[in-house]
Image (cartoon, rainbow, N blue to C red; front, side):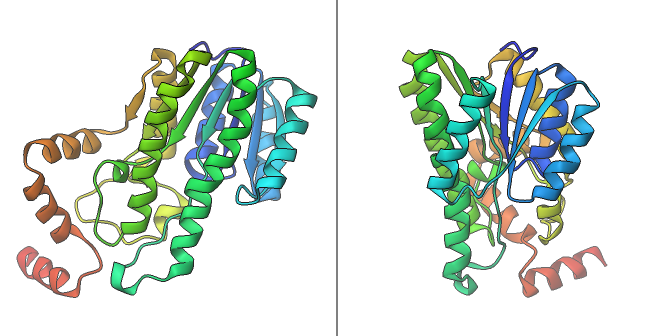
Length: 268
């Protein structure tokens, strides 16, 4: 995909990976960026930074869980600023808790934003891309979209669903000359991940590193972009020895008192 001169829309752009992707796309020479998030102030701060790179910026402070609001915003943006060439679905939320202690509102929040919000904006943009017979869609999943982790059951479920959604769209939208890709980062150092208890031995990547890998993947038209050596190692282990990987993940899980005690004794 040629990046220079395009118009790109990034959801979840106010922080973390979405923010880093917006900055890297600006450096790569996009013409216009449409930045979507709920935090109007953080969007304004990012827009000011990107405008210094001579890129036109439009901020859309909308809630992706509100379909009417999303559809109106996309229609107005398309009419006022022209077609969207690239959609990057990066907005998401994660809750970490053992399944038996999990709460329904947490599940509803994850499904509402990670899945339904992504579906809503993708449907609105993809219909217009199909009319033009041109476009690229990137859905940001996670390594947990390939390998589920203890204490992250509902988050993993949404990320697995994103992989399935992406694969289905890739086949359906190909006839309209729309490429659909998945980005699967490993643990990334963001505001969201700092609220989580990390799994042992996992070394977080930076959001900028993830964004740089995406830019390279866009240029190569890669259908699925797995980020980081840890991700490649984990996927390889899951193929070769899935039961062993399950045991490793269970032992590395941060929320078990017994395992934490055993790990401390082992280190001592």
